[in-house]
Image (cartoon, rainbow, N blue to C red; front, side):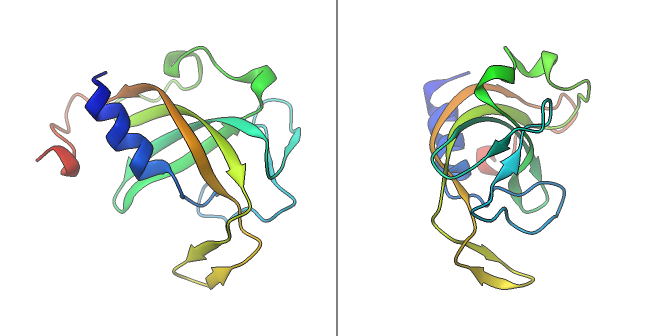
Length: 130
């Protein structure tokens, strides 16, 4: 992974609503670790699997630091999509949801560190690389 690709992804993911699967943005009561169901709240560090969808990068799942995966291969068996593993802090910044407007209690991703990016083999360059 190039430094440029990591920096670009970190910018794209910073500020994303901490939501998964189209559910409303996580509120101050937090998100749950996909492995142990520990509640992760504002200020907590998380490992997040993010995937590039039609509208840009979106969080797919979260893990607590204790259950953070070593790499993408140990987190997901799905291949062919553009995916990344990032570490981030849950921040109580409020979030904007196009369906329901601004949620002042929404959590977003901040202080993003990119660990790994995997581009799908059949997709060619991402929209950002074209």
